[in-house]
Length: 150
Image (cartoon, rainbow, N blue to C red; front, side, top):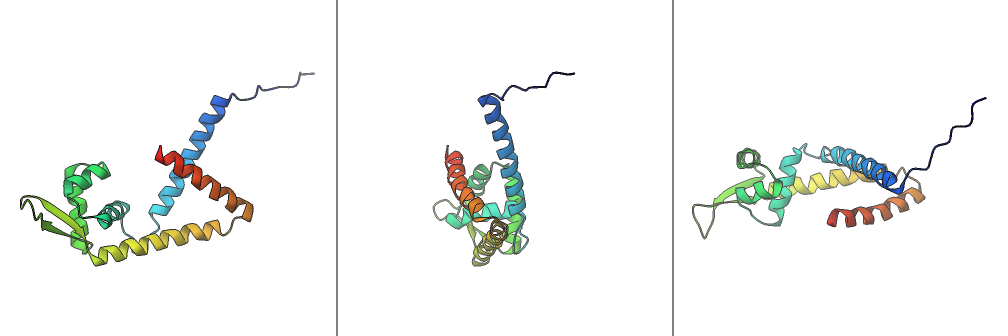
């Protein structure tokens, strides 16, 4: 007769590492799914740039920096946004050599519609959860916000 197999409890460090991995993967899957939920099927990178432009006009260099992409990549993205009518280029009032990119009213509509579509996607899934699960997600959202701010 074999002796019963016992396993030592996982160390707190192992538990934290496993939780971190599980949490990271779940957040990535949700983020990926939500990014592709768009009313106008706008590309995720276009939406991200429009959100920055919604706050204030920016130069292509500023946008490349905040998006952490190369200048040529941002130039292609901005060309696409301008071609779609979501943004316009203009000379900077203080330095005619600089270009400012500004969101258009159509661009603002796309941002608003995309947010609404993404929120509806998430709300439809959250609505299927029990009240206890919804409260748990409420608490988890506050914790995740704190983690993201660190």
